[in-house]
Length: 157
Length: 157
DNA sequence: GCAAGACTGAAAAAGGTCTTCAATATATAT
DNA sequence: ATATATATTGAAGACCTTTTTCAGTCTTGC
Image (cartoon, rainbow over all chains, first blue to last red; front, side, top):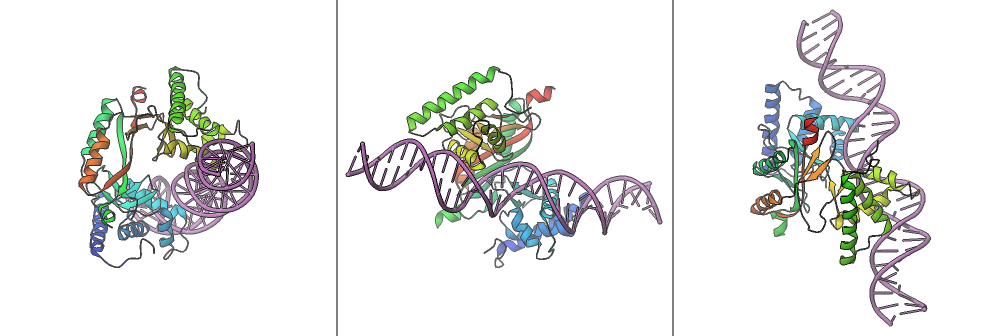
């Protein structure tokens, strides 16, 4: 079963709200959230867990039979650039960002069992690491913070 | 100029010492640091900055004309597994670990100008992030902590 | 309306990693 | 020492991930 085919559950509401929030933010900032970009965003929001580029591509082809890799990568680039989604470098996957309004740099907890990924909404790690970097004369500009392990749901099972 | 072709400088000594330390650790732990694995390790130590798998492969071919991708990836897997090197997920590159004796999880500062990468030898970030993860019921097993930016050397120039 | 810039389609290539199977070498247990 | 099991390497190839390029289309701003 694909990450997309799932019964409605409590997260669908979050997904919809998230998409409308991005729509609004794009309007405010004068960004062009084109149909293509929006579709990719919706796919990510519906999946509610990290998705790989080729899974997105496959899904896009349902409605755009001609979609090629650059189609999805360009949309992802746009969404990344404006902070609407994140890329998880350690698993080459993309995930929507539940609070795209405030720019932030937070760690992700990636479950190696169910492959869910949640943000740790706490800037302390990012701040500590930035402080340590600056203390070494390094000017920090971006962070990749990913923790692998087993989430609480999977530990119970 | 490749990352390998460089004049001798103060790091060469570190590189040699690092390799012998790994040789010793392997003996102690009963690991088979075969000639191939050792060669990859030496290439990484000499480079003194992150190196991509295909650059290593190219270099390996100087002495093993038959080397194929799995040749280098298998050696890298071995070295990673035993903590002798690190993989930088955000740039798909590998770097030797200056203190392979003590297992550790530390952030890397990756300069986007000169592409150097240094470890921040301070476990506080890893501990904080682990504590936050556990507080959420998540059992942490591995971390990817990478900060991009500009190193002090490059800021001066 | 027109020029400049932004976005998409299409083809291809480059870059990165893994699977498989056979051959060889090393370690273990008689 | 020999046979067996295990680990390592060679070789071919596939698969996954990402980018480049060029041409065409759409928007935006003048």
